[in-house]
Amino acid sequence: MRSPTQIVALDVEPLDIPLHVPFGISGGSQAMANNVLVTVELADGTRGYGEAAPLPPYNGETQVMALAALNTTQDWLPGRDAADWRALAVEFFGKGGAGCGSAQCALEMALLDAVTRRRGEPMWKFFGGVSTTLETDMTVTTGTEAEAAEAARAIRARGIRMIKVKVGGAAGPAGDLARVAAIHAAAPDAPLILDGNARLSRAAASELVSGLKSAGIKPALLEQWLAKDDLAGAAALIVESGWKTAADETACTAADARKIAAAKAAHFVNIKLMKSGIIAALDLATAARAAGLGLMIGGNVESILAMSVSASFAAGIGGFGFADLDTPLFMASNPFDGGFTLEGGMISVAHIAAGHGVTPRM
Image 1 (cartoon, rainbow, N blue to C red):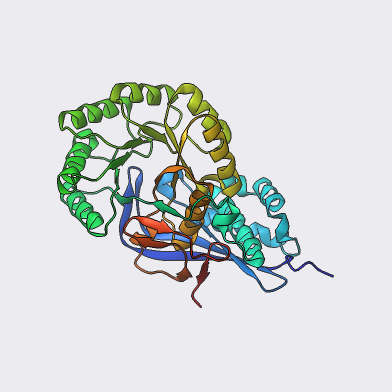
Image 2 (cartoon, helix red, strand yellow):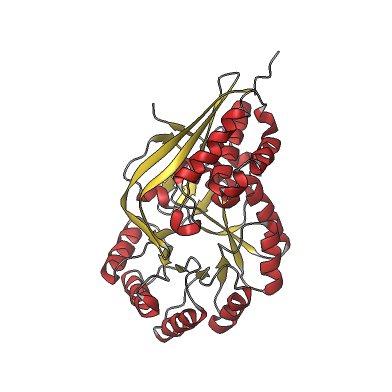
């Protein structure tokens, strides 16, 4: 007799969602979320859903890469037991997931969703049940000074308190300073997270710090301004600025967290499930806490599906000082039902009864 959690079908398909405006970071921009949807069906009819959200300007991963990695599972995953999702995730890592973190994340997400849905257990409870709410920021992507000010006003009109600003673009420190100053003038009470996506040089970072201080602007957080391997520079930036910093591209594994802490190179680590998957994110969170680092939750250009998993992850574990789960707000359409609710900047997953609570619209 086969187990009710035996995998009987697996579907992998492109998930293309247009954006209201291109989502620009220092490494480039994306006009559409070119993601991947994974569906796992169990013997009892339960379905679990996962999303891969590769972001080429962030780490070079593409939809083609994610599709290729995930399609290899068709040869070996059907017939296996989803209850062994951790072992299956490790197996996939050795068969292609290691080369595409977003694909690894999507498979783990779909398997875990199927298992927790069948048990009638919400993911936020699976991850610990510490909380069901957290506060997200919203991002001002790359663009002009005028566009930045307009975006800041729109964010505050939504009732979102904290604003994240992409810096490190082609306009250089002077252009970044002008954009940040325009945002600060438009929303003077908004805490600012300045995210460089590892594109600022040490000289540019120093110039921008000096300019911000001269303008009387004190950011709430500097996120990954320098190259991912420049731990010494990151530590020096903390001393020079006197401000809190977060590691993103630098922090992908538990070992990374220990290196960051030893080098005193950041105060927080930005955990993104798309970097290496859910299991690696759990390990990273545990190691970061043990090393005395604070936690931030973020993501790529993800729909409500993946973002609801990240919200459940962070709320369930608890203790996250910053949350950047805003990309569903950038999407011009939503092909799903369910997921977290948002009131102002406050995310809630309390109503989700099983899994991540998101299902595709048929």
